[in-house]
Length: 312
Image 1 (cartoon, rainbow, N blue to C red):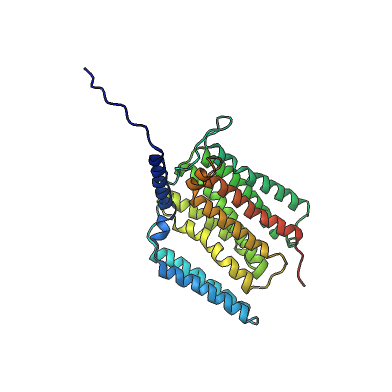
Image 2: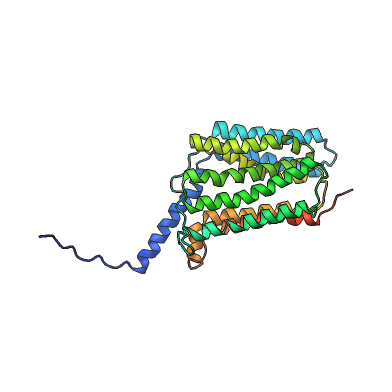
């Protein structure tokens, strides 16, 4: 005779709160556990050098272009050596794909909000491409520069499709198609900024794009995120220094800072994925907001291109 077990008591509200807190702690560990494990003093030293170089550039307006370029090269080499020598291999966390909002809300699309929140990238990229073809943006007359900006806008479109495909069925295999267009957008935009401030970006752009694609390939083959971290982290670190140290050809450079601020909001939202999902009454998750904020960050670029003019 089968033994009957007494029914389990219903979970109390306190139990639910404790469960949510446990999930939040686990989620926080997924997001920043690897960052906390990084050696801090070398990284602080690199940031300190950036601050010192920026201050020197502000105080010494007559600094030569060679000296400024040498400063940026020093930071580049220091960051590469830091990742290669001081940081152990960074594997992809197996729980990374466990997002808060798994609802299927429309048309049998799994993870509907995380998929649909990528639509702004597609719309933004298509609008930017059309505005550039129409001659609405103030960019260099060089055909190479026009092609470079077009590449950025195509990459933004691909970010929408790639990220949407990944969130349809999250896994390491589909994550490749999420990260690849992101690196293409990061590296090509970095090359254009270098071109506008130093005049060498268009020459380096093919190498930067290849480096970005290789970083994703390297991660997919070895499960080591260090090159990918470099491709994303280094441009964000040095962009303020480019704006301070090198003379601008156009006004409106402050929009780059606006873009960085919105991207910071996106990263904070990503880290607090489940917290935001619960705080909004399960209306929208932090990861969906990350997509929206990232699209707003990228929208600063066409805004800048449409209103700026060349400085004398």
